[in-house]
Image (cartoon, rainbow, N blue to C red):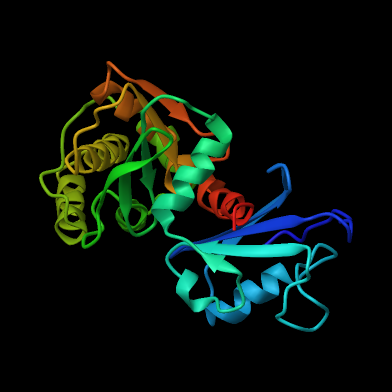
Length: 273
């Protein structure tokens, strides 16, 4: 993780958001107006408690009293994400659903109904917002299909770096669908298709289309605006375009800090508790 560099005032109030995901930990530091002062991310390492504490305790902007897990009076730490329940030193915790809503709303400030699509490392969420609150949501809880883990596993089988996938997919010259959403069966299908001579660019494009299809099967998107959050979208921006092709009557909005929406939402929550 990158070390914070700002000199903070002892008289001002600061809010830390920690999104403790299955593959990455994202941290943001906000001032009392919700402006992001720092953001940083790193791999999720274990023991989780100690690694998150060490990450927050680095640099001049540490929220902790020196050599102690006790937070300074003018700092508040809020946690969300997969591993939030393992962080006992934080001031509060909130669900990923609420964190991503607060993070997106803080940035976009929409006053109309909209839908958030958040594709995470282990799950995917479709969240409907109405009257400036979460109205309903659907979540892919028990299967990796349509998640970052699904993409990473198949990228591994294809021996393609994650950062190269969108570029390669944009070079496709044929479209087809994978027959399975299951990571194991999709992996077998990918290998079989490669053996039959299919171009790797076309396979990656098919993988992306498979993710879009799986997410949209979770629920009906009923709003006119769709906002995207989460690290997977940040690494695979072509997904936004493919969602737009399937939801052609709706406006697609990529949240500016898409990778940090959960952490930012946690920090924003800290201002209200």
